[in-house]
Amino acid sequence: MMSEVQVHTVARQMLEQHGFAAIAKAAEQAQACEGRGDADEAKEWRHIADAMKIMRGPHQS
Image 1 (cartoon, rainbow, N blue to C red):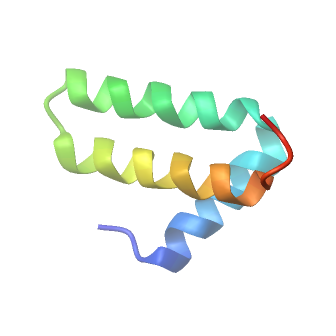
Image 2 (tube, rainbow, N blue to C red; image 1 turned 60 degrees about the vertical axis):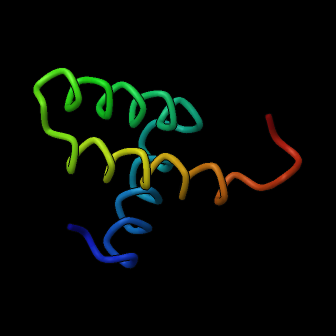
């Protein structure tokens, strides 16, 4: 499992590279992992997506 620092680092990097579309990309990765039966990795991708949602702030949808 990733540490909180790693989760936030990946989330920040993805936001810088992809903008807010990064949240959707993380969700797609989570679904792909679930499709492969990798529940732990799917959980990490969802954690990354949640971190990005917090980073984007309350005023953006």
